[in-house]
Amino acid sequence: MFELIDTLTQTFGPSGYEKKVAGTIADLLKGKVDEIRSDALGNLICVKKGSGKKIMLAAHMDEIGIIVSYIDDKGFLRFGNIGGIPPLMILGQRVVFENGTTGVIWYEEDIDNMKNTKLDKMYIDIGANARTDAEKLVKVGDLAVFVGETVEQNGRIISKALDDRIGCAVLVQLALSRPQTDNEIYYVFTAQEEVGLRGAKTAAFGIIPDMALAIDVCDTGDTPSCKPMAVRLGEGPAVKIKDHSVIAHPKVKDRLINAAKEKNIPYQLEVMLAGGTDAGSIHTTAGGIPSGGVSIPTRYIHDASEMVDIADAENAVKLLAEFVREMVH
Image (cartoon, rainbow, N blue to C red; front, side, top):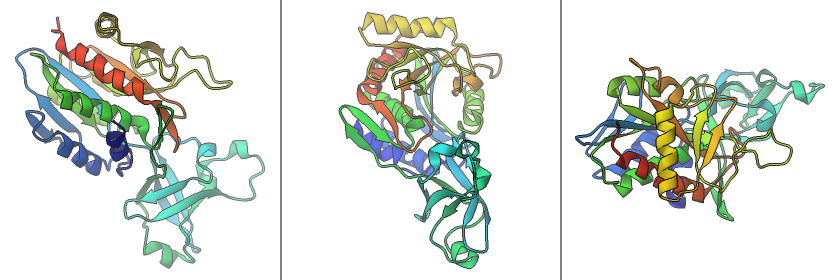
């Protein structure tokens, strides 16, 4: 699974520019599902046809990034955020544009209190001597993503963009395994989750599934002095109870828990007090869709070095396979 994760995390794809990620996934699933299509917003929808109920499994393709807002006379780039970016966590980080241009994020030297550092007090240095030099490489409106290679160590994966390419990897692996079911399965790789759960809403409206799951990441409570949370790396995928965007439908939550218990698949319960997932927009689509989530515990979310346990991802595949096999009542 490492090669799959590496391929997906290292593919350029900030919000609104997921086309390369979608193309990679489509190539991987060609001939493995009955239908592959894209919608107007850029969601990739892969369908395993069936005579039973429609189940939508959603994982977002987009990653956080930055957008150039201004280039000064000396060639330094001012920028804004694409998705949630904690300012202190990006100081000194490298970013790369789609054309390969690389820059370093730094801050104005006259800042007195680093705790008050905001993005408008930061800039990107691409090594240009003047605006004209910079504009040969980058223009206002160009997007960049963080640089972070994919490393496997002690059964853990460290990389940028695990939010949510790890969820995409889980869905790809599940589709490749072809779980036997009469249900119609929609593997939906969504666009623009990081900027407002946008793609999932339009995809769900086009499908109107009988039940839906968001496969995404969640925080953990297993690092020094962190906020208490009943989720740890390596103890199984997390069954969502609630996040800021959704209260998991009891029918969906119980179906996941029962499947895990019956097949002895390790699982955890997730109550996330901040942040949301695609389930937040799916469950209020049309007349309402019973929705929930399976989350991959992840440390250092929205950093260039996020961390997951590969066993949690593998067990998520097993749990989802059992989930889709059952008939929806």
